[in-house]
Image (cartoon, rainbow, N blue to C red; front, side, top):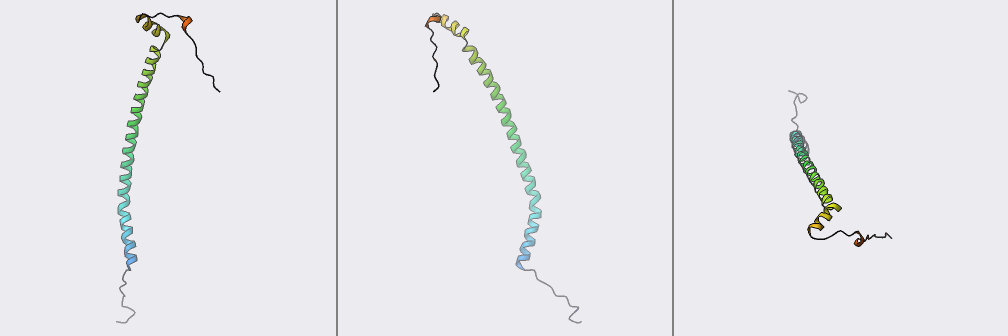
Length: 102
C-alpha cells in the first residue's frame, strides 16, 4: 500500500477532550437544573400564597379589633362605664387641648 491510502489516527488534544466532556456535561445537567429551578419556584410561590392568606386573616382580625376599640372609645360607652364607677358626666369640666403645628 502506498502512503496516500494509509489513514493517520489523529489524537485529540487535552483541550478538545475537555471541551467535549464539558459539552456533554452541560447537555446532561441542563434538564436537571431546569427541573430543579421550576420545583424551587413552585415551592416559593406556594409559600407566598400561604403568607398572603395569613396577611388577609390578620387584616380581618385587625379590622375587628379596630371596630371594638371604636365601640369602647365611644362617648356613650365612656359615660356608661363612668356611671358604673359612680362618676358623673359634667360637660363644663371638659377642656379641649389642641396642638399648634409650628
